Amino acid sequence: MTETLKPPSDDGAALLLPDTGIPNGVHVGPQAGDTRRDDIHAQHRRAWSHRVVSDIVGAIELLIVAFAIVAPAMVFTVIQGVAIDAGQLAQTGLIAAVLYHLLNRVRLKDQFERLDIAGVGAARTTGTLSVVFLASLGLGIPIESYNAEMLAWYVVWLSASVSGIVALRSVSQSVVRDLVARGWFDRRIAIYGAGTIAKRVQAFIAAAPRGFILSGVYDDRSDPARTSHDGLPPDGGIDALISEGRSGAFDAVIIALPQSADRRIAEISRQLEQLPTSLHVVTHMAPDLVDQIAQHDVSSVGPVGLLDVKQHPHADWAPIVKRIMDLMLSVLFLIPLLPIMLLIAFAIRLDSPGPALFRQRRRGYNHTTFKVVKFRTMRVLEDGEAIRQAQSDDDRVTRVGWFLRRSSLDELPQLWNVLWGEMSLVGPRPHAVAHDDAWGAMHARYANRNQVKPGITGLAQVAGARGEITADGDLEKRVLADLNYIAHWSPWLDLTIMVRTVFAILRARNAH
Image (cartoon, rainbow, N blue to C red; front, top):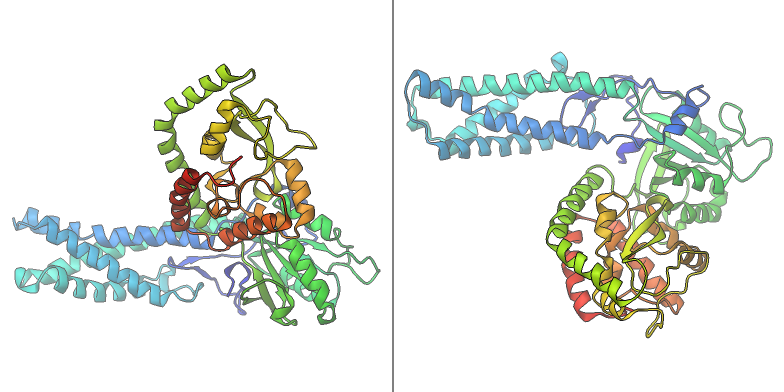
């Protein structure tokens, strides 16, 4: 079930964020037709992730369980003068945290739960911790070690843990309620289609008490019967939908067309895959009508079933983890490389007239344009409508430039692009705007590469799909490698590609 499109409960009861007991609250954001709709549209703010917030609170709960064991240890040490083994204490706290996590994980398979007594799950937490502590005390600190004092140890530890968790959930509850009221967790949804089926989806989203905002209705057909649920004409066609999606106006797209339009649905799906949003199709159609999709999940919005064509790339923790990795590793690389970069800049200036650095417009995340920074390797500084791609024995390449390109050292200044947030260490390589336009016309899925930040290196590069593109097969191999990276991203994959990049540089294959 897709979390971002999960419908609220039928009876309107408050919902909980996973792991925390934090209520999702009541949606008070603007709906379709609301005078504030344009304001929400203009904000272009990506919704906060339920999973990230709940995971953070859940992690703090584990720390409370682990460190609350210090309370009984202090009681025994200060009052009774009992010497406590620090290693045994740490072992017991760790065991308790692991057991608590395992028990909670089983209970929290349902992403959203109803509120428990007192709104913070105090009774259930006490029961869970009782089981956890009885097991962990026996595993970590044998009962014969303390005899009669064991009961006091258990009571103090349990009291400290429950008090800490209840306090945490109470504060978290208040904070998240406020964020929910402000619409921070709302999912902005665009609908493609303005017929009968589409109006059912539109009507539910507009009437939903929380969680959804109807961000726009689009359709390329303009007959009078095609309107939004409130009678307004569509906001535009497929081109307008793609343009709004590139500007970050919504988080998900639902294609709501009749079953007879199966081929049109497949074509619309292919065009919309390039957007960094989740993509869904009303499930009156067979899954095999959407080409090149290996498997499909299903979800729903209100009473309407959906086929999940594509999930939001790098959602939840992924962008946070990836950004932390980029910042830490780029700084780690820059510190020892700065002297080398200064020497390279000096060599470039001695070798040929012109600046040491070269800036060129490239397309990045969601087709935004930025200027990539590289060491100058040619006698020209091309950044116009027509740019000749570097070739073998290219007479524009300088002597120092030839070495820099063969060794990929010309890419080092892009570490600054990574620090500025325009690029990532690993991702699809950004190409000049002129090349992007030309290659986008050659390959239907080329634009899908821009769903994530571009990288200094990528899966295509370490697989040998780099250098001059002389045939359709060259472009196909590069695009498929980049899309495979997006679909299967993980921190481990990024680290693997970085290691493979070193060997690819040593081989210097297709480097011109």
